[in-house]
Image (tube, rainbow, N blue to C red; front, side, top):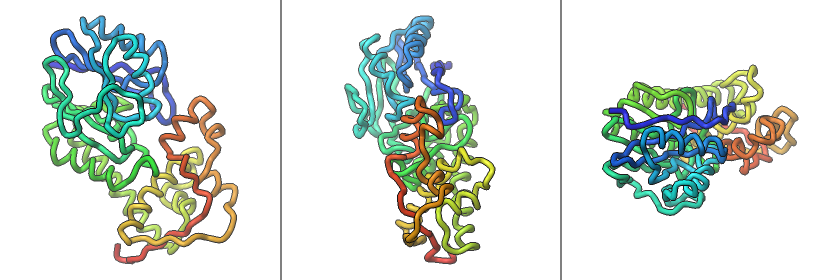
Length: 310
């Protein structure tokens, strides 16, 4: 029996794809759980309340996978409308009523969802597992299509990769993935494997670039690994490579040397773009959160392999 209804927020963009996916879970006894109520758009809050009512449900609890501005801000107005408490990761800065029991369960009516600590995209990220549907609610750990942004300082590559591997190892029986954006995934095992392979491939490409070309800056690596035909995506690509480089540097496999010269205009665009120019003022807050743009990369570094056999 399908217990979950997708209600997509009307906030499509390059970062949110067709919009943020909010979910209503029928928990039995006429009670519902709302997962990731999304951005503070009044008509989306209305849609969540009306969708629940149309299914004969009352929203009794609200849970957040993480605190990014396309997933969490509607929790407050939805709570005000329904009286439902807001649950979030204990480390979440989003105002909430109750901390999720990490590695425990979230119980609403007759339904118990497993709560999985899932760091990497952010450090306040959880995923949920609903045994009755063999379904994972993955937020921005895994999307319905395309890769996830992993950007320091709010995210980190190795914790993210460990989260993916954990989902593969511990939830191999999962059938469905309800991701934070994009379509519902009906082959969970294949999608998790795809995500693991993608991150491994990117790291191999990065190491190959350093082995072939010697010391490289992040802008040089962006153009080598990704190509020069999508300049609007270069800043996001740069943050992905930074996350990989920071992981490799912490493992002693890569070293970095600061270059004593100013950045070129292209290097500045790749490392520190004007977000208003990149996406417009309406999306700047979201992109700042996703790209970790509070960490300005004002100095240019050349990265090199310390172990050529890495």
